[in-house]
Image (cartoon, rainbow, N blue to C red; front, side, top):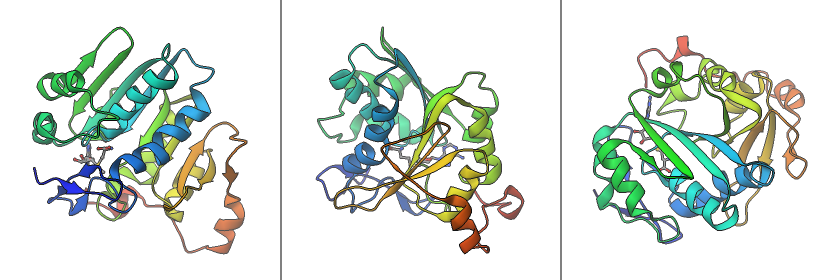
Length: 249
Ligand SMILES: C[S@@+](CC[C@H](N)C(=O)[O-])C[C@H]1O[C@@H](n2cnc3c(N)ncnc32)[C@H](O)[C@@H]1O
């Protein structure tokens, strides 16, 4: 594993097949995880919850899963988390014990268990990594998720995990009060999520690019995007459709 240094001092990897890094080098792997996914999701949902079901798309190095657990331990110690995370690359997951995680999220027991058995469970946290194609793995799921971390490789490299049909599958799996966090700011992605009935919000950060939250309930502390106006102003921007990305991943 050739680890790559990112702006906040945490490491990430580069995927040769997809031709992309697992995290933004300029945001920092840990910074991106916390600011774009964990903190906004927990701020919106953890205060009133006893238990949260999380869908982590996709497991990769496991930053979102590890950070959810360490953040919950620190701020919401009674909260139970059930995390389901699809991942195509079994060989990567098996090697994660040798990856240099930041101390803030490092959890050797969890990583060892996931890399050996793709599962971890203790009295408060359960994690299942489903090896295979995410869209196939999600077909067999009969539970609902409160939080979806949409952290696939970019729409250009991994379009099947950003299409209208994909987001319609995700929206069917969301609980009554649920949200999606994503680093993507693409208008086509926002439209695909908006078309499933979600409200779209812009999340601003200090010193790094803004990100997006999509929710099926009102998020009063975030800036809601007027999607009808945006779509009127850019009529040529269309969401990805499966039929247009045949043959790509
Ligand atoms: C950007 S990385 C995820 C980073 C991860 N969230 C983290 O924090 O470490 C994208 C991951 O999606 C996986 N992947 C790509 N296509 C997939 C698919 N169709 N089904 C499941 N996993 C997929 C890749 O192998 C890679 O590990």
